[in-house]
Amino acid sequence: MSDDANPRLRDRARTEATILAAARDVLAQTGFQGFGVNAVARQAGCDKQLIYRYFGGLEGLVDAMGAELALRLEASLDAGPAVAAPTYAAFAEHLLLRFLDSFRDDVLVQRIAAWEISDASPLVARLSRARGAAMLQWMARARGDLVAPAGVDAPALNAVLIAAAQQLVLASSAMGGFSGVALQSGQDWDRIRAAFVRLVRSSYAEPAPDA
Image (cartoon, rainbow, N blue to C red; front, side, top):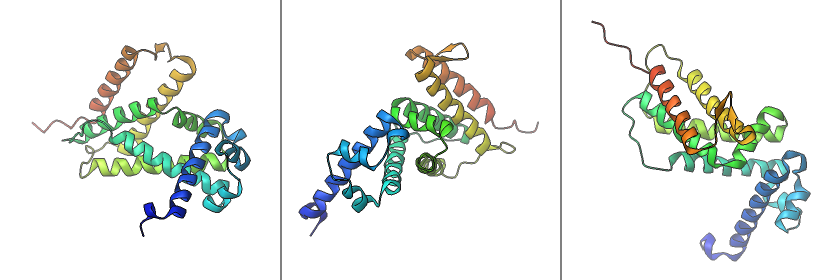
């Protein structure tokens, strides 16, 4: 009998989905200060014992949220037309711009990223690890056999670029700009995208062949 035809399994899947949605809502509304089994159960309209039964408690629920956020991140990064990058520079450019768009569109992930900086709690760390692992998996899959030009520390450079994109989005949400640069209109973000493209292309330019 398939899971879809088994009422008990179907009801469990529906309840788990309801609890996960409630957990996202509580986290978005209150942050980790108000995040707990009782708050999630109230939001989901269920007995808190179901959270222990299906997720093993709060840490298991956070792990499930992390896995779900990782899938959302991968799906967002894969959205849009497929790009067959001929060079590592083209791959890095596509990666950075897709990350920028994905991060701008996901308010909950923005809040989690801000908590990573301000709150070193174990629960935040669990979500952070899931998000980071998803990013690395997507990069490895998308990169394929492409390699960075000789002498370029690609992991460090990519980390700097991604951190810059993340900071700009967080600054946009908090202050509407960063370092005197407005980050509100579509034109503002087109300006940022053009700056990132210039940085990536110059940083990953292939060395000129010997004369």
